[in-house]
Amino acid sequence: MRQISRRSFFKFCGISAATLGLGPLDIAGLGKALANPAGPTVLWLQGAGCTGCSISFLNYISPTAPTDAADVLINHINLAYHPNLSPVAGESAAAVIQQVRDAGNFVLVVEGGVPTGFNGAACFAWTVGGVDVTFQEAILDLTPRAAAVLCIGACSCFGGIPAAVPNPTGVFSVRTLTGRPTINIAGCPPHPNWMVYAVVQLLQGNSISLDSYGRPTAIYSKKIHETCPLKGTGEINTFGVPNRCLKQLGCRGPETHANCHLQKWNNGVNWCVGAGAPCNGCTSPTFPGTNRLNRQPA
Image (cartoon, rainbow, N blue to C red):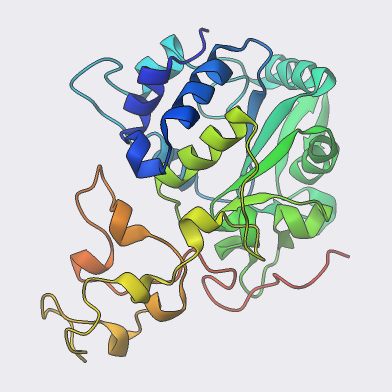
């Protein structure tokens, strides 16, 4: 597969350089990075989750080439492995992953939490020589060898829904399990633009400013309520009233950090609060409620 061109990359993501806050020098550097055959390879793994993050990332259709995600992935991106998208599976997939692992200089993208219960047997990553490899074993093996670890979604970042009480499969975030730093693109699912921002920075070898929870400050520095267009419109206590603040209805915007209303979703069509639904705080470490974020695996 060919590497993605600079133009195709931004068409694929349905975003502009300005949206990502990239200047002319950034774009020039990105072009060189994408054209560099020695650039980092990407392994995308999935653990305990719903695959919603991949769906969000692939939610792309365009009237011009590349016309859809399949066109991009087949004709433009050199993606080493993704469990839903790669043409290889089984032992063949394990061989590809092993080759990337041994070569080093790869970016590990993790979607989904890491189950540790039942000796990790609640989730298997692949099979090598007839032996099943748990997702926990895979993460512990690959994270020390990766040039960077990018956690996509609430589950891999903080545990998310799979780690909520009673958490029978013992799910942990990648960072909690491994004790290693991760770049956390939080959300359930994250906006595709947020994922792309992190990928662009990693491709260029740029450092990413992170908050105390490992989230890029370029995305998660402000609380949603601070810049919400409904702030100050008057709080309501019943649903169905348009263009009014939903704080009294449980909106978690006052405590949630993200730029949802600036990016909006579905190619800029709308966002949760704009559609009349309270923010559910999906970018927060405690989403969806009390979980095992601060506990260590046994």
